[in-house]
Length: 298
Image (cartoon, rainbow, N blue to C red; front, side, top):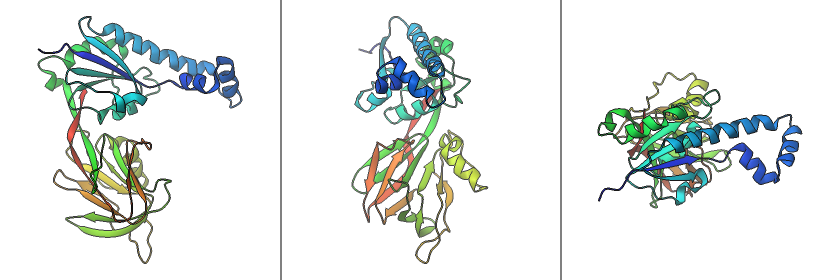
């Protein structure tokens, strides 16, 4: 028997929620902000915007559908089903946070504050939620979905990590990382740097783009659906033992970048530093295009 669709609404705690959790009362939170030149009204306005968007989405879910709500911190403990439609209400980063837990389920991005959020991944206003949910379950959903490329890192001891934007390999405290960078088609180079970024076309609008702009790179950045990755070495340091000859490039579908640790390193994705892979001296991390894609309802 085919299960009724389930709309899973994903959100993160607002700044007001976090302030009240830390300070206990509205008055204490207001005092804390005032001492730093900020106003609680600003925080409360964003809180109302998010909760208004959540209410609008909840109302728009078809009556016959099942439904659920999920806070970002609980993503790793939630089991998504094949019949789920995920609705991310918040900033673009929320879509990236949920992407690695999915296996082809459609994602609708709802932007509660279009005047503050760029809306690269959360493209839609709350009043569009009903139509988008129906579109996500329509027979021609394939025409309505943008399959965004993801990046995967795996280690030689069986660990793996997925990301939508980028994967970072470097020192845990962002000090100098020492490693051997290997490109099978090009060769290897021993480096000391602030770490290596390997990003998708989606990530090429964020952290990777920042690295690209800073060095006035002539590299052509991939688009979100392009089956290619870009990579940048951050602040490579030349020395008698380390080089700076290989600091950026593109990876095609059949290519991979290998990093062999020569100091303690971590690997994390999409800026989530509390979900990492650890590398000790001599361990290898291999980064490549992931087979999985984010199915974003466009």
